Length: 102
Image (cartoon, rainbow, N blue to C red; front, side, top):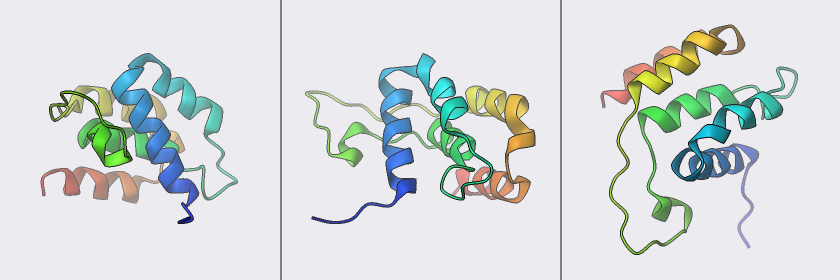
């Protein structure tokens, strides 16, 4: 069995919440954000990444009958950034925004 890092687990959980339960992704971040734990301090950035580059469920090994590419939600990403910018590393946010256009 392949060992998965905590960042992959955060990404997987957030992708599922974002794609299936949009209303709960912000709550997940509030509960799991911990500035003192390296593996949990970027959870809001992970959410922004999910909004800007939404994954397909198939990327996480979940097959569905018909799955179209999810649509980028820049407004939702900016809303998270506006509300929680003080909890994020601005350099990482900048890189996320720059990479969005690649």
